[in-house]
Length: 110
Image (tube, rainbow, N blue to C red; front, side, top):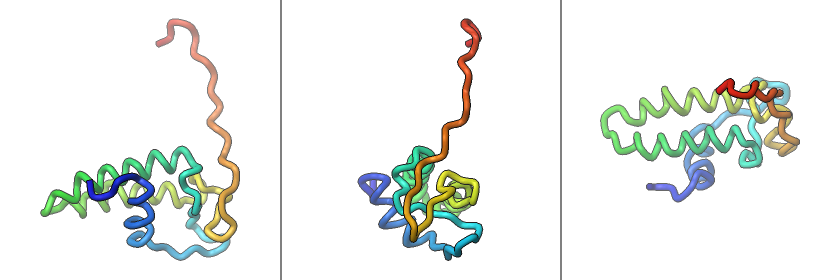
């Protein structure tokens, strides 16, 4: 692997190639402490692993990575209703959103 972990991938690759302007009240939200968000960890780890695999495809690997992986996951992560809702690059991290409410299934359901 080119990067030793997801944090290195995010800081050394993604943060420098996937640049966006953050405007107060705008449509893009990022948390500088992304690693405090379970969904962000999962999505960014998936992005890193897909990048590591697809970078070896010299034909369309990076195009596939951007189209099928980066654009999809980053749109969700940066969305105003995404996991970083309430956070900001300047203000930093706010407490995570509450988990989705779940009820236990009936015994024997699964």
